[in-house]
Image (cartoon, rainbow, N blue to C red; front, side):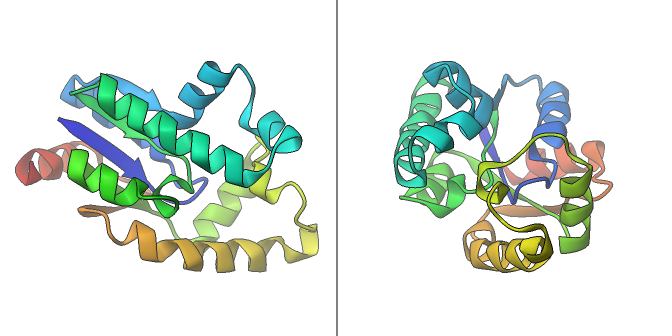
Length: 169
């Protein structure tokens, strides 16, 4: 069984994914961490040296590699993974996709509380941050909403989500 958690940055895909994977006794892969380990660089550093186009191409290849090497896995994808190439169709064909939906206010609160810088936000002026995130989230929702399931990220109930997943597969 392959499960893919998709959604915007700061939506809790990794945190929730680890908990759900443990309950389902599945290996857990954070696609961003997998990418960083494979290419021996942080995503932030990669963006500083190269461009987003190359990142998205390699990210897509990395996703395919994870799918090809894991029959059973829960994958937490990057915020943009579902939005490029044929990644969304590939995930839907290869397993169950779950959109971890988070409200704009929750995303912004988590973003401001986070110590980890995100490459797509580094050059956004502080006074434009909220409108940038709001517009960016809206652009990506068309991809996220293609997921097989949707779960609210705020206070997600792990037991309930596990039950829903098991009854969907």
